[in-house]
Image 1 (cartoon, rainbow, N blue to C red):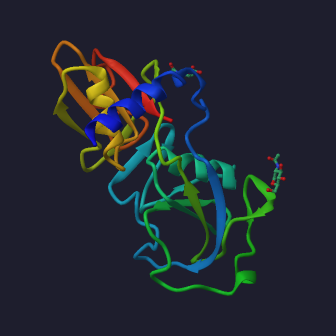
Image 2 (cartoon, protein in one colour; image 1 turned 60 degrees about the vertical axis):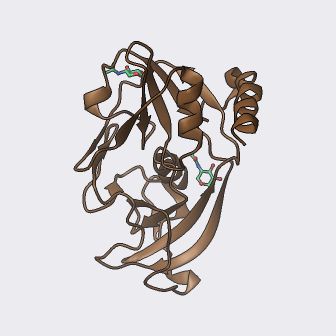
Image 3 (tube, rainbow, N blue to C red; image 1 turned 90 degrees about the vertical axis):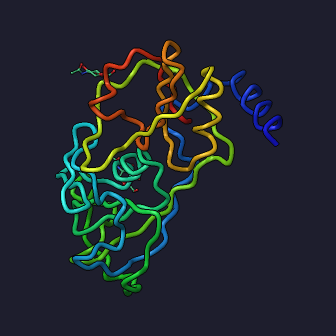
Length: 212
Ligand SMILES: *[C@@H]1O[C@H](CO)[C@@H](O)[C@H](O)[C@H]1NC(C)=O
Ligand SMILES: *[C@@H]1O[C@H](CO)[C@@H](O)[C@H](O)[C@H]1NC(C)=O
């Protein structure tokens, strides 16, 4: 088992350079119009206060240029499987949806603030979409992003690893891992919950790989 994983990653590393640079989403599919509540249906951003330049509060980010593409890209930074658009300009991410029930399709009729030919839910209503990722990951080495994630809970964890490949295998084994920083000197693998590192790791001396 360990061997087959090892060889999959080797095979994958041969195509590392062709990994999609725009992210790892295979497919975005519309699911439907769902009811929301103060106790958010899509609650994946509960502990997050900022992702890159977007501030997050009360489990959502909000802006006047909201589109389906923006919210999908944003939620894919955390590897979330679902995202929801609400009331023209709100974007929410999560691992499940539907706790508060489904609404009538035509109720999600608020145009998105960034593209009026797209629908972004309604008042306390989410237009819910799914994000599909490839079964097997590809890792692309790149420059450490100059953007960070801020959170009230840790968004990284560290494990011992002898080589960068060991570090990638650890990341591949966890759905929560979107990128790694491998510190060869310390033989330490920092696994990141989001594509961006927390500020505490942003100047770590190591090799950064993003899951693609
Ligand atoms: C706005 O959304 C429509 C429907 O999804 C899409 O076809 C169009 O390309 C979008 N416009 C822009 C400027 O992205
Ligand atoms: C961060 O990186 C992006 C792209 O790599 C670049 O366009 C931007 O100017 C950088 N911002 C800062 C503050 O360094």
